[in-house]
Image (cartoon, rainbow over all chains, first blue to last red; front, top):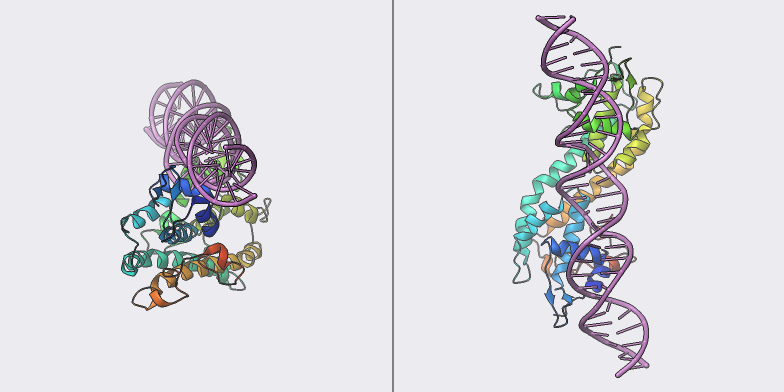
Length: 143
Length: 143
DNA sequence: CTCCAACCTCAACCATCCTTGAAGTACGTC
DNA sequence: GACGTACTTCAAGGATGGTTGAGGTTGGAG
Protein backbone atom coordinates (compact mmCIF):
# COMPACT_ATOMS: atom_id res chain seq x y z
CA UNK A 1 0.00 0.00 0.00
CA UNK A 2 1.33 3.41 -0.87
CA UNK A 3 1.38 5.72 2.07
CA UNK A 4 0.26 9.33 1.94
CA UNK A 5 2.25 12.38 2.96
CA UNK A 6 0.48 14.94 5.07
CA UNK A 7 0.19 17.17 2.04
CA UNK A 8 -1.45 14.46 -0.02
CA UNK A 9 -3.85 13.64 2.76
CA UNK A 10 -4.60 17.32 3.14
CA UNK A 11 -5.36 17.73 -0.56
CA UNK A 12 -7.45 14.61 -0.88
CA UNK A 13 -9.41 15.09 2.30
CA UNK A 14 -9.85 18.82 1.79
CA UNK A 15 -8.50 19.60 5.25
CA UNK A 16 -5.54 21.86 6.16
CA UNK A 17 -2.31 20.21 7.22
CA UNK A 18 -2.49 22.10 10.48
CA UNK A 19 -5.86 20.49 11.20
CA UNK A 20 -4.46 17.07 10.37
CA UNK A 21 -1.58 17.51 12.79
CA UNK A 22 -4.08 18.66 15.35
CA UNK A 23 -6.26 15.57 14.86
CA UNK A 24 -3.19 13.45 15.25
CA UNK A 25 -2.12 15.26 18.39
CA UNK A 26 -5.60 14.61 19.75
CA UNK A 27 -5.30 10.95 18.89
CA UNK A 28 -8.04 10.82 16.25
CA UNK A 29 -5.68 9.62 13.55
CA UNK A 30 -2.27 8.02 13.56
CA UNK A 31 0.79 7.97 11.35
CA UNK A 32 4.07 6.23 10.96
CA UNK A 33 7.26 8.20 10.39
CA UNK A 34 9.92 8.04 7.73
CA UNK A 35 13.56 7.80 8.75
CA UNK A 36 13.60 11.55 8.25
CA UNK A 37 10.73 11.98 10.78
CA UNK A 38 8.05 12.84 8.27
CA UNK A 39 4.51 11.57 8.74
CA UNK A 40 3.10 8.90 6.47
CA UNK A 41 -0.56 7.97 6.50
CA UNK A 42 -2.37 4.84 5.42
CA UNK A 43 -5.13 5.14 2.83
CA UNK A 44 -7.66 4.27 5.49
CA UNK A 45 -6.84 7.53 7.27
CA UNK A 46 -8.69 9.25 4.46
CA UNK A 47 -11.84 7.50 5.64
CA UNK A 48 -11.21 8.52 9.20
CA UNK A 49 -10.79 12.14 8.20
CA UNK A 50 -13.91 12.05 6.02
CA UNK A 51 -15.72 10.60 8.98
CA UNK A 52 -14.44 13.34 11.29
CA UNK A 53 -15.59 16.09 8.97
CA UNK A 54 -18.98 14.52 8.39
CA UNK A 55 -19.54 14.05 12.09
CA UNK A 56 -18.51 17.60 12.86
CA UNK A 57 -20.97 18.94 10.37
CA UNK A 58 -23.79 17.28 12.18
CA UNK A 59 -22.76 18.84 15.45
CA UNK A 60 -20.59 16.23 17.14
CA UNK A 61 -17.46 17.24 19.01
CA UNK A 62 -13.98 15.95 18.23
CA UNK A 63 -14.04 14.19 21.56
CA UNK A 64 -17.14 12.22 20.60
CA UNK A 65 -15.68 11.39 17.23
CA UNK A 66 -12.47 10.39 18.95
CA UNK A 67 -14.29 7.95 21.17
CA UNK A 68 -15.89 6.31 18.18
CA UNK A 69 -12.64 6.18 16.24
CA UNK A 70 -10.85 4.76 19.26
CA UNK A 71 -12.89 1.61 18.79
CA UNK A 72 -11.37 1.10 15.37
CA UNK A 73 -8.23 -1.02 15.29
CA UNK A 74 -4.91 0.78 15.02
CA UNK A 75 -2.91 -2.16 13.93
CA UNK A 76 -4.90 -3.09 10.85
CA UNK A 77 -7.15 -1.48 8.28
CA UNK A 78 -10.69 -1.27 9.66
CA UNK A 79 -13.12 -3.74 8.16
CA UNK A 80 -16.73 -3.23 7.29
CA UNK A 81 -17.79 -4.68 10.60
CA UNK A 82 -15.58 -2.24 12.49
CA UNK A 83 -17.46 0.60 10.86
CA UNK A 84 -20.70 -1.31 11.31
CA UNK A 85 -20.33 -1.02 15.06
CA UNK A 86 -19.98 2.76 14.84
CA UNK A 87 -22.94 2.94 12.49
CA UNK A 88 -25.14 1.19 14.98
CA UNK A 89 -24.03 3.37 17.87
CA UNK A 90 -24.56 6.58 15.98
CA UNK A 91 -27.88 5.85 14.43
CA UNK A 92 -29.94 7.03 17.45
CA UNK A 93 -28.08 10.29 17.78
CA UNK A 94 -28.37 11.05 14.10
CA UNK A 95 -32.09 10.29 14.30
CA UNK A 96 -32.36 12.57 17.28
CA UNK A 97 -30.52 15.37 15.52
CA UNK A 98 -32.83 15.10 12.56
CA UNK A 99 -35.86 15.09 14.83
CA UNK A 100 -34.76 18.33 16.47
CA UNK A 101 -34.29 20.14 13.22
CA UNK A 102 -37.58 18.88 11.87
CA UNK A 103 -39.25 20.10 15.02
CA UNK A 104 -37.79 23.56 14.64
CA UNK A 105 -38.78 23.60 11.00
CA UNK A 106 -42.28 22.41 11.77
CA UNK A 107 -42.73 25.03 14.46
CA UNK A 108 -41.60 27.77 12.17
CA UNK A 109 -43.73 26.40 9.33
CA UNK A 110 -46.82 25.99 11.43
CA UNK A 111 -46.91 29.69 12.06
CA UNK A 112 -47.16 30.44 8.40
CA UNK A 113 -50.73 31.11 7.56
CA UNK A 114 -52.13 29.27 10.53
CA UNK A 115 -54.41 30.61 13.21
CA UNK A 116 -51.69 30.13 15.73
CA UNK A 117 -52.05 33.47 17.42
CA UNK A 118 -55.03 31.95 19.14
CA UNK A 119 -53.56 28.51 19.62
CA UNK A 120 -52.10 27.44 22.89
CA UNK A 121 -49.70 25.07 21.26
CA UNK A 122 -47.93 27.67 19.17
CA UNK A 123 -44.55 28.72 20.44
CA UNK A 124 -44.87 32.15 18.93
CA UNK A 125 -48.14 33.07 20.57
CA UNK A 126 -47.44 31.11 23.70
CA UNK A 127 -44.82 32.48 26.07
CA UNK A 128 -42.39 29.62 25.51
CA UNK A 129 -41.96 28.81 29.09
CA UNK A 130 -39.32 26.19 28.64
CA UNK A 131 -38.77 25.44 32.29
CA UNK A 132 -42.48 25.34 32.96
CA UNK A 133 -43.15 23.15 29.94
CA UNK A 134 -40.73 20.53 31.11
CA UNK A 135 -42.60 18.40 33.57
CA UNK A 136 -45.81 19.17 31.76
CA UNK A 137 -44.76 16.92 28.97
CA UNK A 138 -44.87 19.59 26.35
CA UNK A 139 -41.44 19.87 24.89
CA UNK A 140 -40.76 23.22 23.36
CA UNK A 141 -37.83 23.44 21.01
CA UNK A 142 -35.89 21.39 23.51
CA UNK A 143 -33.46 18.49 23.29
CA UNK B 1 -47.08 44.09 30.17
CA UNK B 2 -45.05 42.86 33.08
CA UNK B 3 -41.36 42.96 32.42
CA UNK B 4 -38.95 40.19 33.34
CA UNK B 5 -35.81 40.50 35.43
CA UNK B 6 -32.73 38.79 34.10
CA UNK B 7 -33.17 36.09 36.72
CA UNK B 8 -36.73 35.40 35.65
CA UNK B 9 -35.75 35.29 32.01
CA UNK B 10 -32.88 32.98 32.90
CA UNK B 11 -35.15 30.59 34.80
CA UNK B 12 -37.90 30.56 32.23
CA UNK B 13 -35.65 30.24 29.22
CA UNK B 14 -33.32 27.77 30.88
CA UNK B 15 -30.26 29.86 30.04
CA UNK B 16 -27.64 31.24 32.45
CA UNK B 17 -27.74 34.96 33.25
CA UNK B 18 -24.20 35.26 31.99
CA UNK B 19 -25.31 33.94 28.62
CA UNK B 20 -28.20 36.38 28.56
CA UNK B 21 -25.89 39.32 29.23
CA UNK B 22 -23.64 37.98 26.51
CA UNK B 23 -26.49 37.79 24.00
CA UNK B 24 -27.41 41.32 24.88
CA UNK B 25 -23.84 42.53 24.51
CA UNK B 26 -23.83 40.90 21.08
CA UNK B 27 -27.06 42.64 20.18
CA UNK B 28 -29.24 39.56 19.88
CA UNK B 29 -31.65 40.73 22.53
CA UNK B 30 -32.41 44.07 24.11
CA UNK B 31 -33.56 45.39 27.46
CA UNK B 32 -34.71 48.54 29.12
CA UNK B 33 -33.27 49.59 32.45
CA UNK B 34 -34.83 50.49 35.78
CA UNK B 35 -33.83 53.76 37.47
CA UNK B 36 -31.41 51.58 39.44
CA UNK B 37 -29.81 50.33 36.22
CA UNK B 38 -31.17 46.82 36.31
CA UNK B 39 -32.23 45.09 33.11
CA UNK B 40 -35.87 44.48 32.33
CA UNK B 41 -36.97 42.27 29.46
CA UNK B 42 -40.18 42.11 27.53
CA UNK B 43 -42.04 38.81 27.37
CA UNK B 44 -41.20 38.56 23.70
CA UNK B 45 -37.53 38.25 24.63
CA UNK B 46 -38.37 34.77 25.83
CA UNK B 47 -39.22 33.87 22.25
CA UNK B 48 -36.01 35.37 21.00
CA UNK B 49 -33.99 33.35 23.47
CA UNK B 50 -35.89 30.15 22.66
CA UNK B 51 -35.18 30.86 19.02
CA UNK B 52 -31.48 31.40 19.72
CA UNK B 53 -31.16 28.12 21.57
CA UNK B 54 -33.09 26.17 18.96
CA UNK B 55 -31.01 27.59 16.16
CA UNK B 56 -27.76 26.87 17.97
CA UNK B 57 -28.74 23.27 18.43
CA UNK B 58 -29.09 22.84 14.72
CA UNK B 59 -25.64 24.21 14.11
CA UNK B 60 -26.17 27.88 13.39
CA UNK B 61 -23.81 30.49 14.79
CA UNK B 62 -24.87 33.39 16.99
CA UNK B 63 -23.93 35.69 14.18
CA UNK B 64 -26.38 34.02 11.81
CA UNK B 65 -29.07 34.06 14.45
CA UNK B 66 -28.28 37.69 15.11
CA UNK B 67 -28.79 38.58 11.49
CA UNK B 68 -32.18 36.95 11.49
CA UNK B 69 -33.19 38.57 14.75
CA UNK B 70 -31.99 41.93 13.50
CA UNK B 71 -34.85 41.87 11.02
CA UNK B 72 -37.35 41.78 13.86
CA UNK B 73 -38.60 45.17 15.04
CA UNK B 74 -37.07 46.56 18.20
CA UNK B 75 -39.72 49.09 18.89
CA UNK B 76 -42.68 46.75 19.02
CA UNK B 77 -43.48 43.17 19.80
CA UNK B 78 -42.83 41.04 16.70
CA UNK B 79 -45.92 39.86 14.91
CA UNK B 80 -46.57 36.57 13.27
CA UNK B 81 -45.55 37.96 9.94
CA UNK B 82 -42.24 39.17 11.33
CA UNK B 83 -41.46 35.59 12.34
CA UNK B 84 -42.97 34.38 9.09
CA UNK B 85 -40.20 36.11 7.19
CA UNK B 86 -37.54 34.34 9.22
CA UNK B 87 -39.32 31.03 8.77
CA UNK B 88 -39.21 31.40 5.04
CA UNK B 89 -35.56 32.36 4.98
CA UNK B 90 -34.51 29.49 7.19
CA UNK B 91 -36.47 26.74 5.59
CA UNK B 92 -33.85 25.93 2.94
CA UNK B 93 -31.00 25.80 5.40
CA UNK B 94 -32.92 23.58 7.76
CA UNK B 95 -33.78 21.32 4.84
CA UNK B 96 -30.14 21.25 3.87
CA UNK B 97 -29.02 20.43 7.38
CA UNK B 98 -31.47 17.53 7.51
CA UNK B 99 -30.29 16.32 4.14
CA UNK B 100 -26.70 16.21 5.30
CA UNK B 101 -27.45 14.20 8.38
CA UNK B 102 -29.67 11.82 6.43
CA UNK B 103 -26.86 11.36 3.97
CA UNK B 104 -24.38 10.50 6.67
CA UNK B 105 -26.89 8.14 8.25
CA UNK B 106 -27.67 6.50 4.95
CA UNK B 107 -24.02 6.01 4.16
CA UNK B 108 -23.35 4.42 7.49
CA UNK B 109 -26.51 2.30 7.20
CA UNK B 110 -25.82 1.20 3.68
CA UNK B 111 -22.65 -0.43 4.82
CA UNK B 112 -24.52 -2.66 7.19
CA UNK B 113 -24.99 -5.99 5.57
CA UNK B 114 -24.63 -4.70 2.06
CA UNK B 115 -22.16 -5.80 -0.55
CA UNK B 116 -20.54 -2.42 -0.44
CA UNK B 117 -16.99 -3.67 -0.29
CA UNK B 118 -17.36 -4.30 -3.95
CA UNK B 119 -19.43 -1.23 -4.75
CA UNK B 120 -17.89 1.86 -6.20
CA UNK B 121 -20.42 4.12 -4.55
CA UNK B 122 -19.60 3.08 -1.01
CA UNK B 123 -17.55 5.56 0.92
CA UNK B 124 -16.05 2.87 3.09
CA UNK B 125 -14.74 0.76 0.30
CA UNK B 126 -13.97 3.68 -1.93
CA UNK B 127 -11.04 5.87 -1.00
CA UNK B 128 -13.24 8.90 -0.28
CA UNK B 129 -11.39 11.21 -2.47
CA UNK B 130 -13.25 14.32 -1.52
CA UNK B 131 -11.29 16.73 -3.62
CA UNK B 132 -11.42 14.43 -6.62
CA UNK B 133 -15.13 13.81 -6.22
CA UNK B 134 -15.93 17.47 -6.35
CA UNK B 135 -16.02 18.36 -9.98
CA UNK B 136 -17.19 14.87 -10.81
CA UNK B 137 -20.54 15.67 -9.33
CA UNK B 138 -20.41 12.93 -6.79
CA UNK B 139 -20.72 14.55 -3.43
CA UNK B 140 -19.24 12.52 -0.67
CA UNK B 141 -20.27 13.50 2.83
CA UNK B 142 -19.87 17.07 1.74
CA UNK B 143 -21.89 20.23 2.22
C1' DC C 1 -34.85 50.85 58.12
C1' DT C 2 -32.26 46.91 57.86
C1' DC C 3 -30.89 43.03 55.39
C1' DC C 4 -29.93 39.68 51.87
C1' DA C 5 -30.58 37.88 47.48
C1' DA C 6 -30.35 39.45 43.18
C1' DC C 7 -28.60 42.66 40.40
C1' DC C 8 -24.53 45.64 38.22
C1' DT C 9 -19.66 46.19 35.55
C1' DC C 10 -15.39 44.82 34.01
C1' DA C 11 -11.65 41.95 33.36
C1' DA C 12 -9.90 37.62 33.25
C1' DC C 13 -10.36 33.03 32.24
C1' DC C 14 -12.02 28.67 29.89
C1' DA C 15 -12.89 24.97 26.22
C1' DT C 16 -12.98 23.86 21.53
C1' DC C 17 -10.82 23.86 17.20
C1' DC C 18 -7.88 25.20 14.95
C1' DT C 19 -4.19 28.88 12.27
C1' DT C 20 0.10 31.35 11.98
C1' DG C 21 4.88 32.04 12.26
C1' DA C 22 9.64 31.20 13.30
C1' DA C 23 13.43 28.40 12.81
C1' DG C 24 15.12 24.43 11.05
C1' DT C 25 15.18 19.54 8.26
C1' DA C 26 13.99 16.24 4.46
C1' DC C 27 13.08 14.78 -0.24
C1' DG C 28 13.16 14.53 -5.01
C1' DT C 29 14.50 16.72 -9.32
C1' DC C 30 17.93 18.93 -12.37
C1' DG D 1 25.16 18.08 -4.99
C1' DA D 2 22.46 22.10 -4.94
C1' DC D 3 17.95 23.94 -5.02
C1' DG D 4 13.20 24.53 -3.81
C1' DT D 5 9.16 22.72 -1.95
C1' DA D 6 7.31 20.16 1.52
C1' DC D 7 8.03 18.71 5.71
C1' DT D 8 9.30 19.18 11.17
C1' DT D 9 8.41 21.25 16.15
C1' DC D 10 6.90 24.52 19.29
C1' DA D 11 4.80 28.62 20.94
C1' DA D 12 1.62 32.01 20.34
C1' DG D 13 -2.58 33.83 18.54
C1' DG D 14 -7.57 33.84 17.29
C1' DA D 15 -12.64 33.07 16.77
C1' DT D 16 -16.71 31.48 19.13
C1' DG D 17 -19.53 31.18 23.08
C1' DG D 18 -19.62 31.72 26.94
C1' DT D 19 -18.23 31.33 32.75
C1' DT D 20 -16.12 33.11 36.90
C1' DG D 21 -14.91 36.33 40.30
C1' DA D 22 -14.05 40.75 42.54
C1' DG D 23 -16.01 44.63 44.16
C1' DG D 24 -20.02 47.33 44.45
C1' DT D 25 -25.42 48.59 44.10
C1' DT D 26 -30.54 47.69 44.12
C1' DG D 27 -34.94 46.26 45.61
C1' DG D 28 -38.38 44.14 48.11
C1' DA D 29 -39.64 41.59 52.41
C1' DG D 30 -39.85 41.82 57.29
